[in-house]
Length: 386
Ligand code: ADP
Image (cartoon, rainbow, N blue to C red; front, side):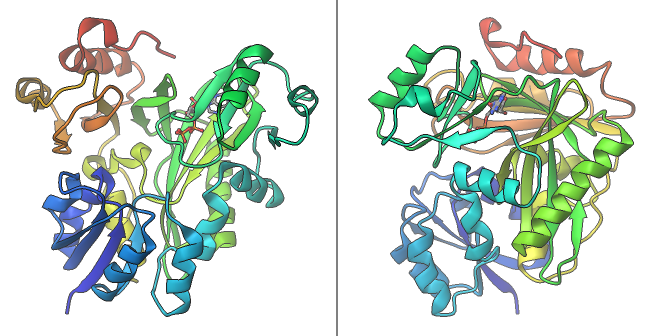
């Protein structure tokens, strides 16, 4: 009998589970706000409700054996009542709880002895100036909850701007040092129900205006740095008793120091290359982990790979057929189009993976340029290369 898996969230991360679900005989049932959301087309059944609607999750839970997450903006207090009544969440709510608020996440990582930037939570009680006196500008201001794709993250160069944003908003913020990184890295790790951990090759990610534009796999880092990152993943997943796939975003500094930026308790954009480039995709691995199946090989099937996000650059209902056809004709490329009915600036509409036979670094500029010049109007193509 097939496993029925409930997924809270029906965006592209749930949509990309479709092939693995078919392969493993897992039935997907999604809870997602809109009938236009990508995963509705691949789910056996959909419940249309916000991801933090715990009453809808209660209905979802009656239709499936296990509930997992593609979106962490959930109401954990309300869900914990369901967990007490026997609903099987994977990862468990105890594993998710320290990760949902960026400040609490930083505290959890620091208390585990893992490397994080200097940070503090802003309190409305004290004068702003005295709270940030230990940090130098620029600083990074982050909404503690519900930030994604750089929304809610601000790099701030002076006190007046900081004070304006903080005073005009009711959001709770975290402030941290600006890390002058030389590279941004990410790793996808998975942990099974038995505690077995597997890890994908570390990747280099490139963000513009806080949004990921492209990813190179594997990252060009030293053996020691690779081992250090793997040790971080092991310590974190073991401590959380985590089950499923988890993304870990990191900074690498000029001195070779590694700092954790953020933990995403789900499949992650930096692991999309695995769909085409790895023995097992991150989506299959997540299904395997949460369904209690053994974890399989995360190795690359090619020397290296690049993933470039296709971000919206206008408000439109266009399906971009012509650009997608041109992109698909790039050698060794696969275009993944999420089927969103509406494009908006910055919205993730799809991605393209290019498999490479050799070290990607000398080809990066050409590949990104080729893809972005097909996809974006001229002014929006990537200008900054590392
Ligand atoms: P989100 O959760 O919205 O993705 P992040 O916290 O991951 O936000 O930040 C998005 C991007 O902003 C990062 O990938 C990085 O480029 C930049 N950034 C975030 N924090 C810092 C920091 N402390 N120092 C320098 N850059 C940062």
